[in-house]
Amino acid sequence: MSFKLGLKGIQEILVLALMLVLVALLYSQIDLTYKISMAVLVFSVILLTTMATEALKQAEEKQRLRSK
Figure 1 (spheres, rainbow, N blue to C red):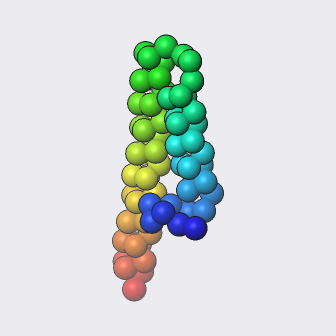
Figure 2: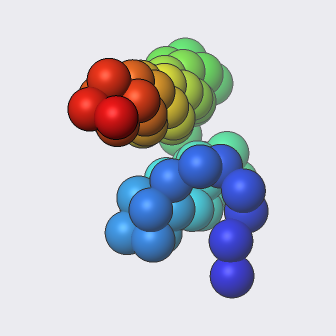
């Protein structure tokens, strides 16, 4: 099962777990300020994970092309 995020298996599992945590937090009885801050934190972790993976893929591709 792949969601085409460009991530490896364990990274996709962790991103999905973060999404599930966010959904659970949104339906919990905590203050709205905490909900918003946790949503921003989860979104930024997912965004940074995706960007780091793409940067690593581009670096590997550049190195592979350079070695030819």
